[in-house]
Image (spheres, rainbow, N blue to C red):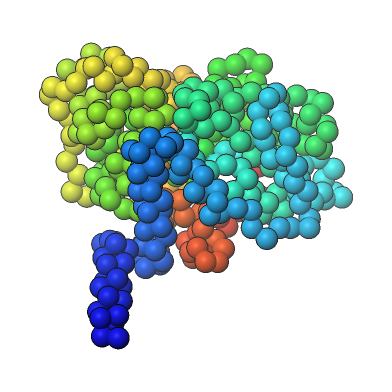
Length: 408
């Protein structure tokens, strides 16, 4: 009996050691966040072991674990019709919200899920519930694009999938089929999905056939650049759940089918050092530090290595492609983008990506709403139902819906 108590105490202590990570006092529901993060870290570690043993690619294993753990929930809305179909060969899940007698044509939103371009889907419960609620709250048609994932495809296939699905939906006969108003179409996404939404909005802005077809873009803690992994938010939130810096850089490497040997060098910004010729033009056009306020920078120290590794950009030129990093697009591309909503979280490595994009869009004359949450963390908007419900998840979702109601 005594030995059992000792063993149980040791196991509890070990579990507490694994779960506990230091978090800022201002973050929402810190102990719950630690528990959620520990589960996600555990899933990643199991998938890495599977990869190491040669049984499967770590992202395929991680995706299998996620889909097994978060299958479609029992929650649904009798007011929303849900259909799985294809738009020009791209899988989509369509959510048709209730119609209003006074509005025969509905607004519509094209939505892309997050997951580092590699995990999750339109069908997992978190995104199924988000899009169902969006369709019901907005009386809208929501097209959730199930774009193909790494490692089955790599950049720019994900961008192309979203572009094809969006173009298909914007055809007059398709809009008519779903009773969608052609003048009230928006594009949105969270995290990597926000990256895809921003990239496609820029692509459409340069396509004469589709220019001005999108009324709004709404970007939820979007990934927008891969030049600097030492912005203030990357430095301040280097190990913050649910997206530590190392994991974000690894997602970038996977997206481009790059070499894992480059991860540590990219974390040190050696891929964009001052001696890398390809980056010089971007540095001349963009001054990162001027796009952020002093209150954001805090104890920020820019990391600008004099010498680095030019081989990284030569092997992964996609790092400098605006389709992967919408923040680096030229001013001429930005100035005709639609009205924009950007939601950022204080405790998120990607916080400054969103803030800098908002600043650049404002400078280009675009009407922007920057919605910042001081107690929020990356991914919080999908956590609104028991047992992974966070107060800030509900507040961010409500704020997002409120903006869409007023602007779409």
